[in-house]
Length: 203
Image (cartoon, rainbow, N blue to C red):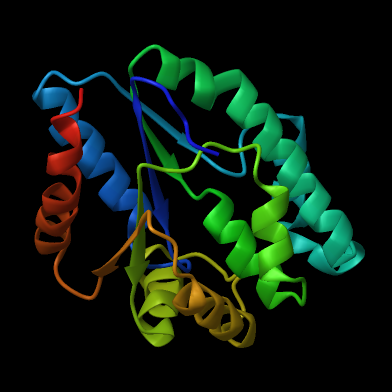
């Protein structure tokens, strides 16, 4: 669904460990220094459905893929209605860490139909830009377990992330721009800025 608002919606996508969350923070800081109004957010959200989703990080086998998808859709509906659309209407640049492309990839990897998932997200504004970060899975997993010193959750097993990566690779939507996230943080940031800067002229 086109946003038809004065703001911009920029989403950060990719498998875990690609550095997308770090790049979102760097972009937010850079835009704020230029005087642009920025709102940073994420999915799952901190709402009631988002909290239910986060609880699945350690017990994902307790829910069917179809029911899991329903939770993601309900969380996104609240997120869109309560935050994303109001902030876009106020002319803000909304930066979102994960959006419906992640749902397509992660729930698609769980066996659901990616095309159907996209259709069921038609209530959500289409991003002005979806930055899809890519690193080889071994690097992403190493970043999670060694750099962040975190244990892999139920959405992060290597076998599952391989399927997720394939789903991301298959996505061919006009809003998507792919970024090689194996480079150093500043180089990736410069690539992100190069993608975002042309959009700022419309504000």
